[in-house]
Image: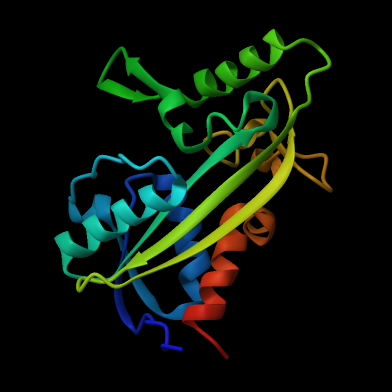
Length: 211
């Protein structure tokens, strides 16, 4: 059995332009002595996410950043899946938020995206199940093409109207099992301890930083 490639001290590119995602990943990586810099801070272009799974898209982003910066890169691809909607929006989670912002060109309107999910559930009637889950794939890529993938998940239910201001994306409508608060009502430290990203990250740490 081959020894897994491991991250060493030094710079790690976080392959994202999403400030909320960057904050979460930096907080999770803080204990491990890595000098994290985002693809946005480096001015790296965002690659087209042409994959049809979270794994494919995470690897696309990680490899693009590793090649462009000539540094190891960590990418996250994550999203919300709703059981009653056949797993949608799933890998297209961010696409559901795409909007033409009046000033500044195209952008993402997460309230609109949450409304789309709620509207589709409403079409199914008041008894439609509201089960959903967040998935997260963390992919590490090295400039020589090596890669590693870690997957996480958290299950919960969807609520309406949105509640809370501490999260991002679909956090204000997602209530994790075992709690009555949405992700956006949880203190960031509480969310970091239980989230889909934390689940994937625990697997990354066990592999990359053993002992």
